Length: 338
Image (cartoon, rainbow, N blue to C red):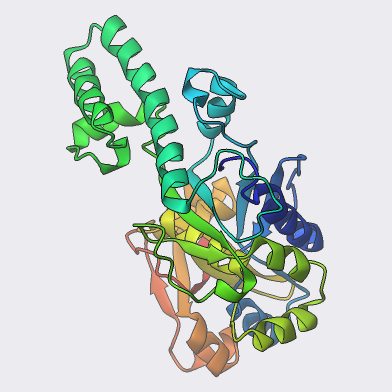
């Protein structure tokens, strides 16, 4: 999300072109006009596929939703108003796209500088949440709920989003049920000129991912090999989209475990701290119900040893039970009963 004319459509179209190229890898992915399902770049999969002689590779994914430009005053009905804000309630995290490019042929529709734009976006979501908690304060009969709503209101009046307020476990549970916008994690993205990708901006007081939406659109038209040459010429190892995808994956507290066989080498998305039975359930719900054990090996060892057979022969495969906490990069075979 962002103000009008900050490059949202350009960036999202680049995402869509990446998604179109990869869509065949993702069964059951329904793509709507404003939604793009994008693969999380993972070089480990190619190595696993080579060792396991996998027929295909399936990456983990992040689902991006493009939301129309936010107008200042949206919380009071400007632009698409609350209808616009309602779309945000359904997402897990928010990307703030902020204008920091120099093309003045593109009209600044409310945008002045990255810091001011960032403050507008935060303020609109805070104002919308303030309206929500005021309704709760006026209608709830639950003392705990009212106390939490009062604390939220006090923070919102000071310009503090819900995500920056301190909560105990009981309060946090109350907050999660209120459907607030500012409780969501955010990723700040500066849309910059191509020649400023590595320049530290002095126009934003917080950390941000630097992306040239124009360059990403050009990259999306190239083959994979051509993209590598293009990025190498700029002295860049990975595209802005790849950095954004990885940041989104990280900020949501996600990690991957891997499976590798003749059918496919695949990355599966789970929450950090998830245990083996729940991870098995990500593949199929019955796997969690009938979980027995899991064969586990780090992906690097899997590749170096040449796959399951040799790794088992050398005693490098661990047999883990129900209490095993999954680690990033685990290659797993689940043992499941009937």
